[in-house]
Length: 311
Image (cartoon, rainbow, N blue to C red; front, side, top):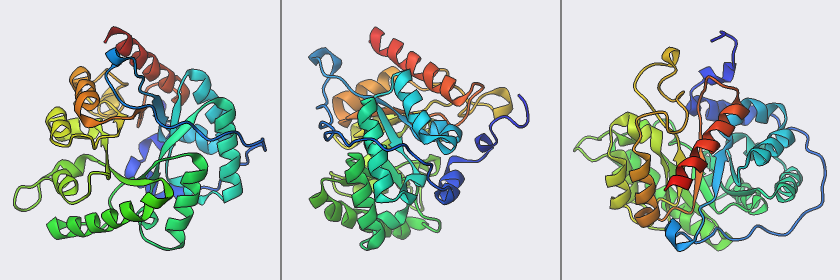
């Protein structure tokens, strides 16, 4: 692999989220607003004729997104994605710009059900007010904390964060929104006393709080994804379909394996989130790849469709 291939690919997702908020918004062509998005389809098993929307976490195409947002959305829609999830840079948008993005999503028939946010979006004040407005414009329902703030340590530190997130659930609810948390590998580690961070979060937030499940980091941590889903019925309302395999980046392992190329028990996980977890939609996410970002997104979606057709 060439050394200069996708420089952003060498930056960890957590660090990228921390710095990407400084990226200026791209210019988007004006278009007329369309009608509001329909509600997320109710969840049920495939045999009952219900459909789970499949989306893309746009971090997967981050280089293309920063280069040309309109073309990125157009290409993602053309590939066949029904949903997108915006991450950190979206928060720098002005409200008029967000309306332009929404208009393009409407034109493309693509929906946004969730966004990734910094901790400031979960504290009353101007930042939360803007997060509410942006998410309402985009049609999102889940305002997800992308990662815990630096310095969150120990059982009491995590419980304090949960208090903040619980308050946010009640503050967002009148606006048709709810709060959520996106896990990373570290949250599967035990604290002093043996309780895992993810279990602390689940136990200290209300049932309306979304436990957005990043599958790959759970697998890397050696946790049992199915057992955790079953322990939290109705709370795993969105899932990041990210695979993982032992090895290093140079061997095209780790998070560089494409969806269903790793060691993840996808059949069991999907059955659990649909029968117990309460999943409303799925989001494919890729942190790196031997292919271009768009080609990676296409291949992952093709694999997902093939997997679903065989289910």
